[in-house]
Length: 325
Figure 1 (tube, helix red, strand yellow):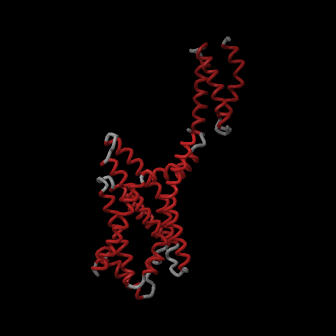
Figure 2: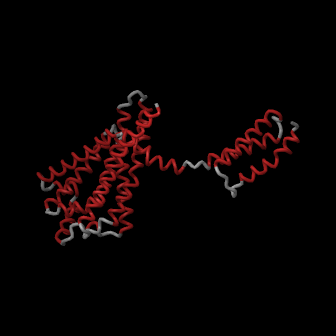
Figure 3: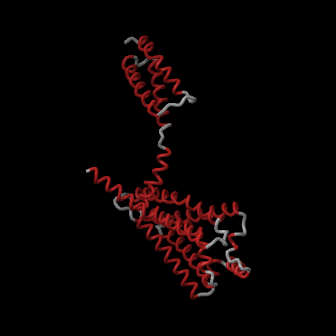
């Protein structure tokens, strides 16, 4: 076919392609894909018969534009986001179940050490929590409002400060895992000792249930998030210590990616915990049953999403893989 006839025959079609490519005219992914197939056919013909022609360069640019639109408008951003939370992250926690267990055990043991240390040393709470906090709490107890510390600050500024501090702690625990895993364990251990000493301090004052039903309204999500940050740190540190069949730096790179994803997974939970501490915990006069429901719901959510659901998902995918065979 002569070039003039080729252009005359197909030019109206190409102009319609240009119209679709305009920013103010939307096109479905299927429509764009169809355009791309037709353009590449025309481009292949032009390259074969008119390789040095302006029409070949024109079709090449037009095809490139359609290609970019296809990949720019792929409707995978939302699905990728959903897939991360419903599949990728849970399976990652299933893979990291041992570091998660170790992190949990470190925290529980350190809480126990904080309790025992407070039992045998009356000054231990002041050593761990600081004189300022202990004296303030004693004053609040004398005033008849032992949980007044959660009411002293305006809610929004309190939320901003708590969220920033807890995010900083989580990142610190994670980053400390770079020190051969030991750093993450040590920081998590210290936080557990603080929790044990803190809770036992109120037990000694006869305020265990008052403190428990107040503190753990937000503390359930908060402490669980720190445990997960600890697991993320252990994943990073262990990837360097125990590279397995990978070169050490390749193993470390993979471990850092996995650990960072695990940390990202708890960032929203840390923010929710800060919201609870700033906007809900202050209502200490709420009935104990309401507080218990919040605590139990938080605990069940963390247990299900990070432990039970990953196990169920793994079994489901394994069963699906076997079914294919």
